[in-house]
Length: 165
Image (cartoon, rainbow, N blue to C red):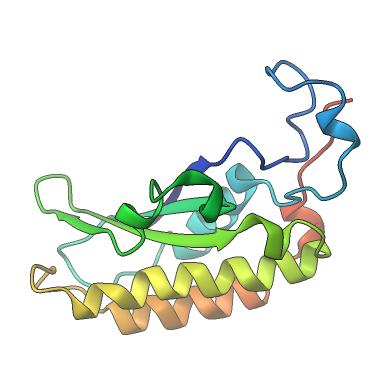
């Protein structure tokens, strides 16, 4: 099983490691609060721990569509996708959205950001069971339990984003 993250964020979101090479003003970086988790490191860590596990034959990849923003600033843009889940049988993929409000998480310690991210991931996985079009042979509850264990034991130092400065 493979785990992958696709990130959509509002312009207000500041990520550790994104300090160079972007269109942000230098003054923006004086603002407090950063997203401190490297999503690439998270994907690698989770996939490494899921590699030999199977949760059925219909899904080989779970894509966590991570949305982080101050949703009120975006006039419903993120609201339309908040409950999105898509089963793609030809690719044997399952895509599901999890959201975090930037103003709620930006000042949290990395361990606390990881916990709220874990909740968003688990919500996205469990939503699969509520959908009319879902994979026949996929143990989403078993997958959620495995992710919960993997993420609760994740070493924060391995998932920490590295500043680009």
